Length: 235
Image (tube, rainbow, N blue to C red; front, top):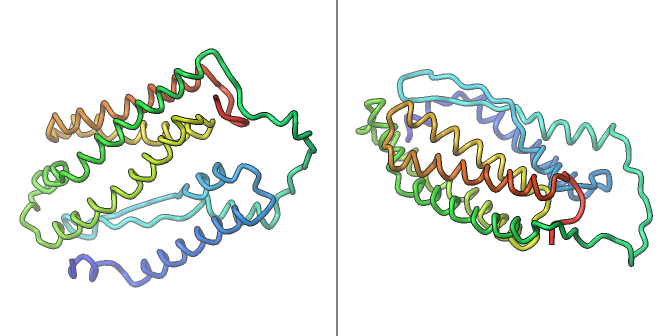
């Protein structure tokens, strides 16, 4: 691990700290400023980055990312137009819509919890990481093993957050659930397809691929039943 840390240029630590500060500032502005009406959508936008990477030596890859989404949030807070506020009578405020397939959408989100658990199991098993190290001839590197152990534990955090969000959406399916489904579905399906091409362990790769396709299937169900991208949830 010490060798990996020593290989990181000092300017990258400063850039990482500055990028994190920009993102935190954007998140604070989103939730404190009245300019941002659909705050969760703006929060997802703040996570958008432009990344580039390089490998200074075999088995080591460094990646730098520019927080374009967070910078756009800050620009909009400073120069963007204020929203037009309209008054809605309390008794006419929409509480949700009841399409014919509302129960189907809620059931589909409940089904989406299973792929999250499956991918979490694959991540915690460490089998795919071992296969990556073996394919690169680095399975004996203690530094890489320590780094992979940290990465394996860190992967569970966003999966846990995704599980909680989908559990909530299984009760009240909001439109923004489609964004989460698309993000997870495309990422997992792409990883699974690439794993098949690279010859990674087929059972584990198939689990990830099937999980991604399931998430995309839930997205299609939600979109067919309720094609809106705003407004009240399906009830």
